[in-house]
Image (cartoon, rainbow, N blue to C red; front, side, top):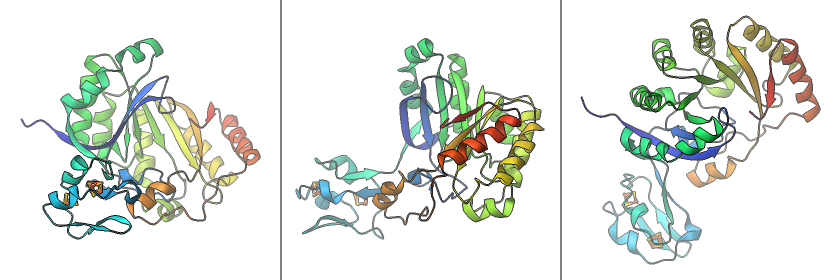
Length: 303
Ligand code: SF4
Ligand code: SF4
């Protein structure tokens, strides 16, 4: 059988908010949602793009000469890329002495990712941490994810999967057999509002959460909280009621909206979809936390 290859867009070390204790977080590329508050736009598309940071260009002309598609040219402002000609071969990324070109991801295999993960074994052993698979949506590359989970399991590394929950139920439950903890996003209890802000309804997401819990898997729910979108008491009360009826919810993390992803959109040449979104007032957040506490949940602010 051919070894699975995956597309990643980051591996983050010493992560403190992606699960218990110190984590290494592996970000898989591709996501079926398009949340307006997404702060990892490089993780949305499955395909890899290359981009240029004009301010870094020192005008040596190396990439212009090497580009097989003649997609690059030098101007008074620095390097210019013709996106319609570029095939994202990454030759310019590898050849620029000033690191003025970047790729939004890379393809890799299990062995290479495991070699990275193994470097952090001493931190996992000391802290009780482990590996978190995130994205994008990690369940969009299920074969690779499963193989990685199994390889981590063989080394007795604690495994967390951070998911939007939008995936075929059979795949989710198979992944769950090799996962110690899920971080599971809940954006809105009303499907119409969910669709308005994420591009998809919430039916399968809620069904999958119930399926995970009833199958006995450990879940921490994460709510990205955005003022005027999902921070009304009605939505939070409905969320608390829904979760209270499920076994195995370990707690709820509230993640207030922030706009730090804006610069990434600019760099990628994408419009920022979060214009007009704001962070809820801290006193209001306290009140919502109380509501969830009253539904019986341990609630953490910021994860
Ligand atoms: S990624 Fe390849 S095709 Fe695109 S600009 Fe760079 S060298 Fe040319
Ligand atoms: S190789 Fe780098 S520094 Fe040289 S022209 Fe291309 S982008 Fe500019």
